[in-house]
Image 1 (cartoon, rainbow, N blue to C red):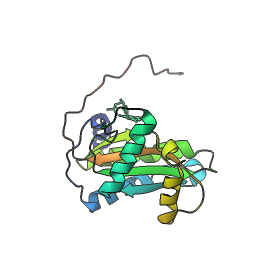
Image 2: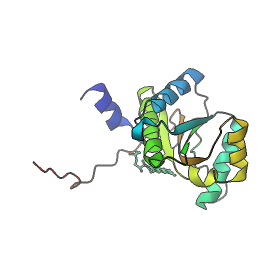
Image 3: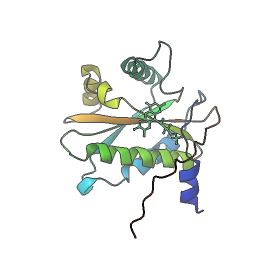
Length: 174
Ligand SMILES: Cc1cc2nc3c(=O)[nH]c(=O)nc-3n(C[C@H](O)[C@H](O)[C@H](O)COP(=O)(O)O)c2cc1C
């Protein structure tokens, strides 16, 4: 197995993170990997909002929990200190695929840098809310963007499980 294959195999969702900050340089490298993802017609429609501000991170977590309908006090970001929100231009037909490729690139980059990561859903619902549309505007984002997903990153505080691969998912047509 080469390094990339190993990274793919060993990347698993982190179930709990330490409350330890991640150096900005590492966060930037994870983001950079996201920017290099493929995109339909090379439109590069996804954008990434890097949330490192603790208060905003906690507010977003609370919103995510509320949308999910999970019990109060549950942290849908598993304690991760950094939340990378991937959004993509609402006018691009491949936005969900483009954003998903961005997310996976960032998860793999996090793994390669010794960080844990976890893909978290419900960005679409979050960023339909006026409050988060205002946040985008305040950051200088122009145009209509749809939330695709979050990559939460940090240092793992728990063993990752290694779910077996299901059989019968490959069909060769030789
Ligand atoms: C589209 C998508 C949405 C996901 N949303 C969540 C989520 O909201 N919360 C969560 O805990 N995990 C979420 N996950 C992570 C999956 O639960 C996880 O990838 C799956 O259990 C397999 O585990 P692994 O990543 O360790 O292989 C999501 C994964 C994908 C691909």
